[in-house]
Length: 181
Image (cartoon, rainbow, N blue to C red):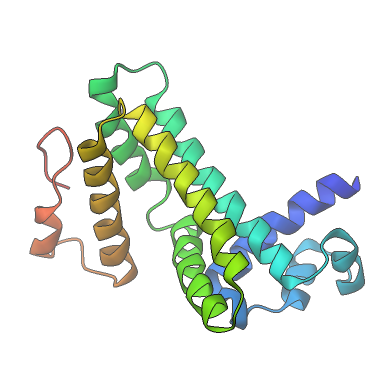
């Protein structure tokens, strides 16, 4: 494997490990083991654990953005919201991507408390890019974009809190077509 291919495998393994253990609870040893490399080799690919985590976070954001772009591709603007929401429910909810999103939020908060403002700035730029992409896909409609992200966050929280599928609160989530989740 080339160094770039190995780097890619480290990012994917890191996403999986960090999604479950968070930044503090994941060791670089666990990531190296999952990839099948030594810890010293891991640090030839990345300067430190923070860099590995940031690469995993950015990949998570890119995967989320790609999900929306792919769902909206070749559709008229008025059909994109539903396609993007459905795609999010099918491809991201109940996956490591959602867990990684949650871990990112916590890590930014902790980094800020520890005086690492740059960490949050990097991830906010990635999140802003995700938001701007969705806003463009939704025809630069601010309300539709806000509604899209608001509904997505509610779904994230309910999923993270393991609301049963038959809980009445799920019925409050209305997809753009008017159908209930």
